[in-house]
Amino acid sequence: MSETALREQICLLAKSLFDRGLTHGSTGNISARTEDGGLLVSPTGTSFGRLDPARLARFDGAGQHVGGDKPTKEMPLHTAFYDTRGTAGAVVHLHSCHSVALSMLEADEDDFLPPLTPYGVMQLGRVKLLPFFLPGDPAMGEAVRGLAGKRSAVMLANHGPVVAGKDVEAACNAVEELEATAKLALMTRGMNARGLDEGQVQALVKKFNLEWDA
Image 1: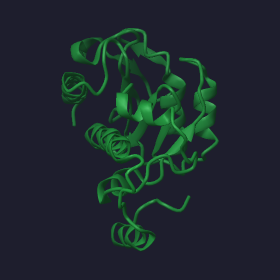
Image 2 (image 1 turned 45 degrees about the vertical axis):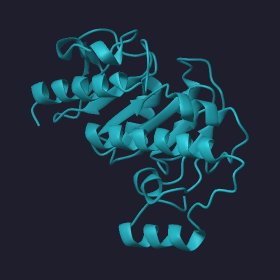
Image 3 (image 1 turned 180 degrees about the horizontal axis):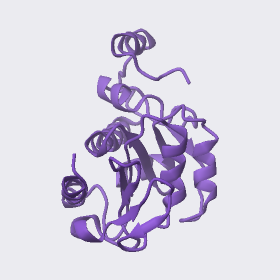
Image 4 (image 1 turned 180 degrees about the vertical axis):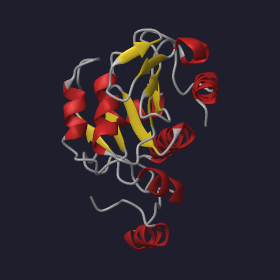
C-alpha cells in the first residue's frame, strides 16, 4: 500500500470508530507502519472523527519525527508494541465505554475478557489488564514491554484498550471485538452466562494456531 493510501485508510477507519461511538471527543490514537519502516501516527489532541491525512505525524525508520503535526502523547505505548512484536503493523488505542467499565470491576489481570465467543479468542488471544497510569506516562509503555511481545492486546484500567494488529484494518477489527466482548460480559454479568469451555477454547487455539497460553 502506498503511503498516500495508508494515510487515507487510517483516517477512514478512525472516523468509522468515532462515528459509531467507540471513542469520543479527542480521545484515542492510532498508528501504522509505512513501507520504509517508519510510522504514521495520529496527532495529539485530535478527534478520530476529523483526522487529516496530510497532518498525520510521520516518523522515519530510526524513530525520528520528520513531518506532520506533533504525535499523540501515548507514543510510548505504540513504540512498545512495535519494538516487542515483530508482527505489529498497526496499533489502536480507544476510550471505549464498555471495556473501560469492565476494567473498573473485579477481573482476572492475566485474562481480562472471558471467552464468550470464538471471535474474541481468535482476534485477541488473552488480554492483559494493566493498572491505572496517568495519561501519557511512559510507564505504560514499560508495562507493555514487560510482556515481552506475548500479548497483542492490553486493557489500561480506567482508561481504555490498546491493540496491535498485522495492519491497520486488523487492529481496528480486533479492538472492536474487544469492546463487543466487554459489552457482552457486562450484559451477562451475574446471570450465570454460558461461555466457551476450556475444550472449546483449546480447539480454537489448535485450529487457528492462536497465541493463547502466554
